Amino acid sequence: MKVAFVGTHGVGKTTLCYDLAASLKRRDLTVELVREVARECPLPINRDTTLKAQAWILHTQIAWELQAEAKAEVVVCDRAVVDNFCYLKRAATGEAAEKVLEALVRSWTPTYDLLFKVPVVADPRFDGVRDTDVAFQREIDEMLVATLSDWGIGHVDLDPRDRDGWSAAVLGRLLPVLQPQELLFPEAG
Image (cartoon, rainbow, N blue to C red; front, side, top):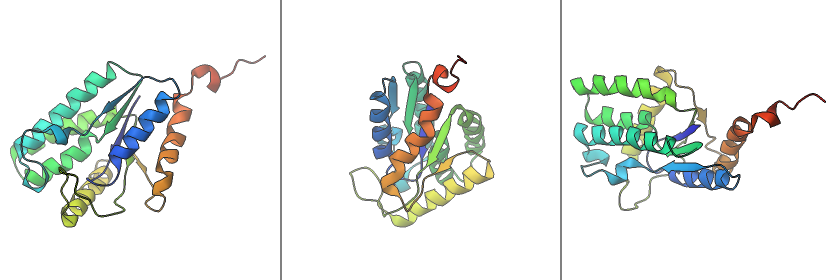
């Protein structure tokens, strides 16, 4: 199973990833966490990003997901290709490569078993990497919401009024899917 948290920067995806991975490991599942790729990018990110930088991020995301899937029952991703694509789209508006990469993103998106959309509930805070421009944060969020809708991508919207309940909501969606088959269909006695 592969699960991803999608959303703009500074909304709490990383915290949710670590919470979920820890909860699943406590249930004796093998879990791999795919960290946020952009933090490792050797090229400019945030508002100064380029098509090359975003292409590097997109391809690296896919590579890390493939590597994680080979190692674990559950893969938890801090982002997915679709939200990485929104940053790319902003940087590459109208370029031919955008269409090629859009085809890649559209074909890769169905590999996620569940996507959780993390809403904006606060302004981004400086952490040494993430952009703190509120307008930029909101722009990416709006692009992501539109892309999810336009492409008909199934996802779970986390409730912006219940940030403290996000981890429980995610577990509530995942645990029934992760139960062993014999628990789901007990033999008739």
